[in-house]
Amino acid sequence: MASSARKVIDSIIAFIEVKTEQIKLKIIAALAKLLSGVLSAAILAVLAFFFLFFLSFAFAEMINARLSSDYLGFLIIAGAYLIIIMIILALLKS
Image (cartoon, rainbow, N blue to C red; front, side):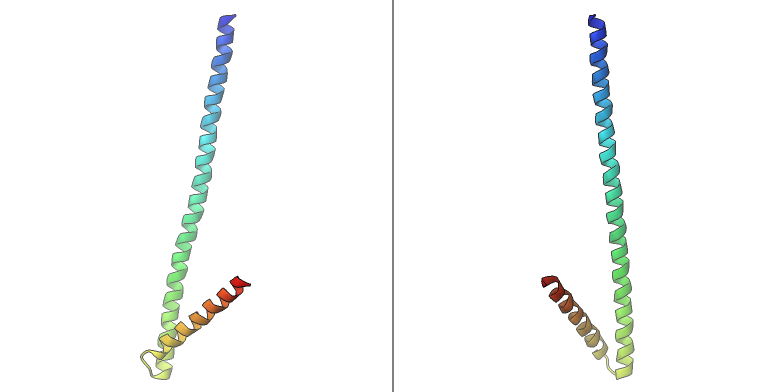
C-alpha cells in the first residue's frame, strides 16, 4: 500500500516537473519569436532611415545644382521635413 502511494506521489512530482519544463519552453519560444520580430523591425527601420537619408541628400544636391547654390537645396529639404513633422504632430494632438 505504501509503495503504490509512493509511486503515485512520484508520478505526480514527475508530471509537475514536466509541466514546469514545458511552460518554460513555451515562454522561451514566445520570447524568441517576439525578439526576432523586434530585431527584424529594427533592422528594417535602420535600412529605411539610410534610404531616406541618402535619397534626401540626392534631392538636396539636385536642387542645389538647379539653383546654382551650395546650401539652398539642403534648406529646402530640411524645411520640407519640418513641415512634415509639424503635420504629424498636429495630427497626433487631435
